[in-house]
Image (cartoon, rainbow, N blue to C red; front, side, top):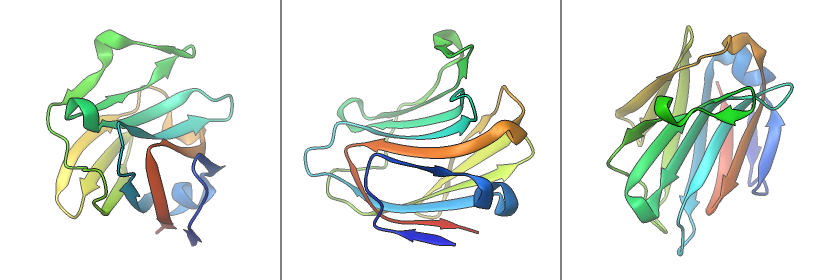
Amino acid sequence: MSIQNPQVPYRGPAQDYLQTRRVRIIGTPTSDADRFEVNFLSSDDEILFHFNPRLNENCIVRNATEGHQWIYEKEERENRCPFQPGKRFALDFIQDGQTFKCYVDGPAYASFTARININQLRNIEIKGDVRVEEIHFG
């Protein structure tokens, strides 16, 4: 299943992701982009996985909430950011058990192990300084 040119912010059900364990987001950071984020959410909006490219800081932050609070000491950070304003990307998230594996334009980039049972996943959210062309499940 594919969603073409969704409005950002986007929020949609994750049932196709739960079936296929894979989602590809094709998009482009806006020309003046500072940051954008992809969140995998439970039914009560707990963030199971937060993927946050910060172009203005040249890093990507990965985290989750616990009790709807960020646990900053558990934050994971890559001090390199392959995303650039105006440059199209393909971002893949593939689930392997409790782990989200992230790929940017093909190669593996990072992974994140969910702290809450991943079967609680209900929604996927994309927001920030990005235009999304396609969200493809499978």
